[in-house]
Length: 316
Image 1 (tube, rainbow, N blue to C red):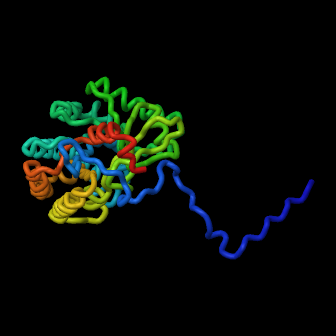
Image 2: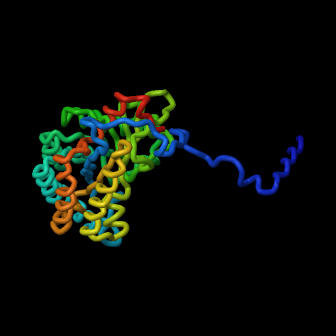
């Protein structure tokens, strides 16, 4: 047996030289060096509402908590989340109707078994249905590749069968990805992902088969779960955060096109005292409709627009 060859001693500090492991999905390009284009109607700012409609298994699995998780069945936290589908979502829809604001509805397909009339109401509004897994009680990142592919395919086929539209976009429950998720999304018919929060413009992602996949901006700051649940921000402060973000991005968008998403979960913002503050924030941004410069839209339409401009709009 031949003895192993001793490794060449590294130069001092060599272990800190060279690039770190990366994802390889897109290159770095600062936003100050991007090609210029505009949204439909000459708008600089595209705004969409990401309306998360989720269902959770009773007595097992994951879920956001209003109180420390208890041994299963965790009735307190389960029923708090269930308020969103029973009450909060319907109050939010009333508000969206009053302001004539479309949504990108992020739908767990388990809702078709539990409360199909809620998904039907969104379809009737003309909202876009976006794949969001079967249940937010589960993560997809730990699935084997074949099982993850099956999840993506089944969600598309169920939404097509029940609602007449197959989703072109995807948001993983808990933003959980495997190393193959972007590849599998492209291979199963999805055109964009909302999993990445790295930019204010759409970015084209590389996939192993060369099929197109866009990463559209999805907020982890203008998002009621990390702000209100995790950071315990008051509803009036969250509403002011939405207003301030909108006003600042509107100014920035005079120079280049930007995307502003706002993420809502009806069991959080659908609570009456929070809904009152949300109404104030959405009324503020809706008033800009008559003043111009803003495109109130849905994620799929954003994807369509940048795809029509590609490669000019390619930020990656």
